[in-house]
Length: 175
Length: 386
View 1 (cartoon, rainbow over the protein chains, first blue to last red):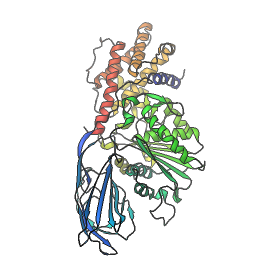
View 2 (view 1 turned 120 degrees about the horizontal axis):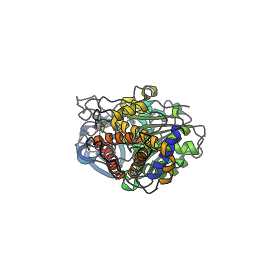
View 3 (view 1 turned 30 degrees about the vertical axis):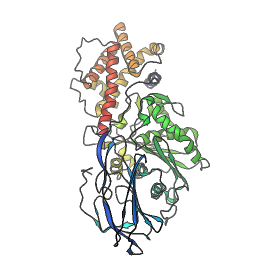
View 4 (view 1 turned 180 degrees about the vertical axis):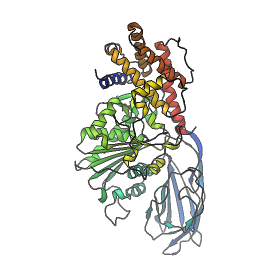
């Protein structure tokens, strides 16, 4: 009998044997880690080039397929400046499961919700969104949304910045 | 048939993780060049046009028609859940059941795929039969993409391409060889890093497609399995400048019978931490079991009992081999069984067994149970970085 046929028969037996439930469940060996869900973000909001003062900016973060979420906000000052602090959590993560946090930041301008930032952050560290802290971040509410794939993960934004401060990727040091 | 480059397939497998339920997520995803409707296409492509998001408890899928650069092509991209509770890995999901095409596959992956199938069917209703379908996925998504490709190849007229990254083994040999025949070896791209533990599980008799074939392989400078090697971002970075041909796996030594025999007979100590040890053990197991089934085909057919576990069945077969050797005095099967168990016991840290140790069925079953447990544990520990 040819060898491959033997092998085929053999494996059918094993297949039948495996119909029974046995063996170790492939449990997820997870560990707790401090994750930066959102880096600090500070900048200027403008409408038609002029400072958009006293505007509420809402930041929504969702992770674990949206099962967990958090929200915070800031209000722009008279110069249109806003400042949202870092959001960190200790979360369980596992090498089997890709970690992603959805970030959405929108300005509530005259009863209209205008998106200024949307990104799925996969990096777990501070300033991992762009690979550094943006310098002179400014967001023009009347501009078109712009999608860029220049960073770790795709970003949709109405903001621009002049440059990024130097940054070290402590998460993937050899990449 | 149009095929995606490694970079495209990997990026799609990666970007799908950023899609949850929001329309914004879909809008960002569909702004990818593969789906652009016109050269001046703006990103305001509506998510509902030509695409669908499938969301189930354990997995997500995106079905989308290709844009101008991929006309008459359809993309079905799968990803695993980003939650930690993975139903597909739970106790209830271990074992084998028939795939939609009737071949043995892992229960967990199968149930995930079946929960998505109605929506995939609906998406494809009315689609042009000549449209090429690209099935793509990383990790669990890769296993589900494989089952999707299998269903498509058996139920639809569309030409199918399958691209997986770090996918666990979806089923047994008969499934692997069948999907290879149906989809076509040239249209299957199963990519894995040498040190990614996920494609190493579950252990034999689960087998990766394509079969025959060796998959698409990314070497690693380390020899220890690690979580980093499973990350889809690493896959995407590593394949970005490669062609599929660059990755075609060269024939590995443990697939050659003479090399397996040599390995079994060699007295040098076994390196339990090396990622290649499992490949050697798999090959040696196949070699020895094939010899036994060759001699004992009638006995095996008569003796198999369906309720036994895998370790029970393997131990029973090995002991039948020893019995045959001793009774007939003609064959050296008993010796091969001993050498195989010798290697396995070394890997498990049980030391090198004395020649006089009796390899009873019970003893071997216990050792094999330990082996099955240990491989799974080690893979998972490596993957979680602990």
